[in-house]
Image (cartoon, rainbow, N blue to C red; front, side, top):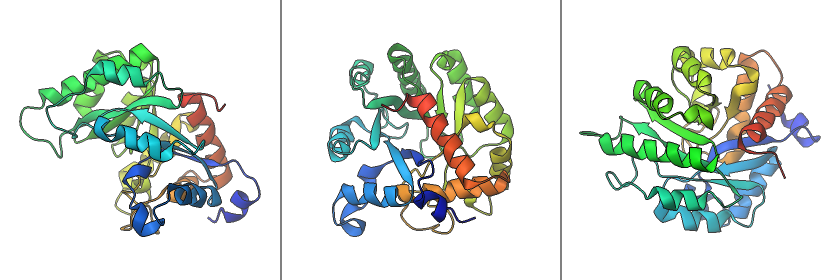
Length: 271
């Protein structure tokens, strides 16, 4: 399904609901200029991007890099694998949420794939982020890898449903998706859904309610087919949307419009 004509003729622009522009190799691919990332995305019909925080140490530079671009919003948070055992001060996180361009808390969650041993520190970090989200009223961006049961359990125990959020780069089955939906969370699909091996995830993409679905790149990782294996970029979120349109037997334009509407409903009306 080719969306080029729709995009170029003023169709509803897509939103890349999760990217890491600061982690792109700007020198190699964009002449060191983040404006080229934004322009390339716009040329592909991507009207907005959420640049997601993974580290407090890198947050200021990430914020400064993308500050000139009104097409970019931000989150504040520390990835579950970042700086193991050294949990951030929740008060610092909370203070950053006062920034009107910070629309979410995260990415946060649990990752049992890359961390080993006693992971109570990781669960404590997750609880702190949920508390900050509830205090600030801003939704959560959840990372979960090989930790679905504990992720859902902690979201429920800490009353995360009060603010909701998104299960980013979702790669679980329908049973987990349903639990997340019941906790007031959206499901976001990355390039993984385009992989031939992701049959279970494709079934989830068919079932998720249209008003609870987002699309993302998680760039520079997880480039979708037909660019699998290359460094990902926000412009390629359209391939994710196109594939979901095929799975759901609808049009690209419908998926673009719906996921964009969903994004602004979750993260705040576009100003």
